[in-house]
Length: 390
Ligand code: AAL
Image (cartoon, rainbow, N blue to C red; front, side, top):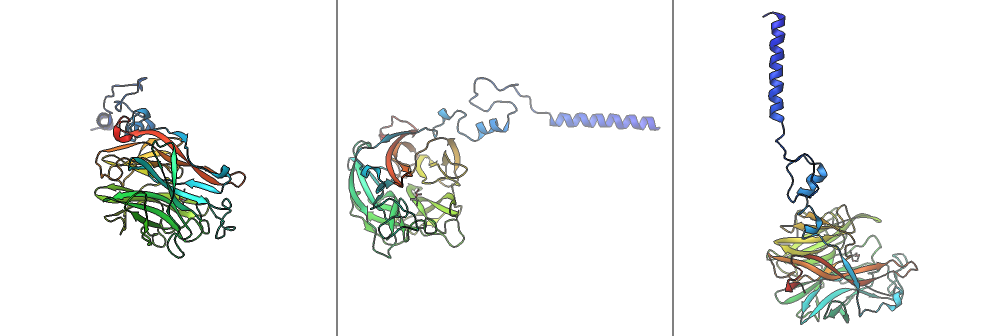
């Protein structure tokens, strides 16, 4: 071959190889050339931006209103609670789940009644609280309609020093297990705010929701080991019955004072008094504050708000462990205490929630820091007309 012939052969060969490459990489034929005005229910057969791929891949439905785990929230003031003209000396916050027993609704909550409003960790004494929940007890109230409540008085008193909770017992939640009732709560052994908001979880039990409550007087969910994410605080215990076990979710605070990172963990047990086993994948939710959860279909849904990258979301985990964002919401209830009709039935057909209690915090421009309970209504149920939801 002369040089000219060689060049022609090389040119033809390279053209041929280019052609085959182009042929190999050619995208499949797409049926749409522009995103249509009518939002397709299924992911359309066309090239999509990252945002539109996510619209179909990351959420159960492309429109929030078609997503069973999307809701907005409506709030109503409650009747029946006195707040001493909102001078900061009486506070009610961090309500438990609402349960229906003996023909009425029950709720338990952190109750503070102190001579002054909170004065901070430096100025607190045996009677002056450091924080809104310092020196608090757990009280309860009942209602026939969920709007008007009758305060019944104390359920869990602060025990004698040095028993867990001697400084404050707060932020409780209820479990019903084999006919008995269990209240889990934060047991403070120093005023909140000294270092952070450090405490483990304690438990009391009773044969009736009206008590009397027997304190177990032992730590039931202990702090994690040194260096672990939950070394200092175990907060907001939230028990459900799932997969034949007690699934107790909790929050921990870690990081620096004023720059806390808050996430949620899970501890499971076969006996309400323990031992509880912390899940090896903890933390299981990377955001949230007083996170409330409820059985939904075969899995567990969570209201995640206030802290973290994924605040203001409703999340879902088929296994109760590996949570994914199901919906993004707004103005979500603080410390939501939903009425969860199937919280303890070990259901595989979770119905969701339509209402509950929550708290509003009055930061007190004039130093009258206290909190108030309110009612929220939402549509996080599979069927609002389901009689079980009422
Ligand atoms: C709340 C809850 C816990 C904290 C404090 C009282 O928001 O997370 O209960 O300890 O604040």
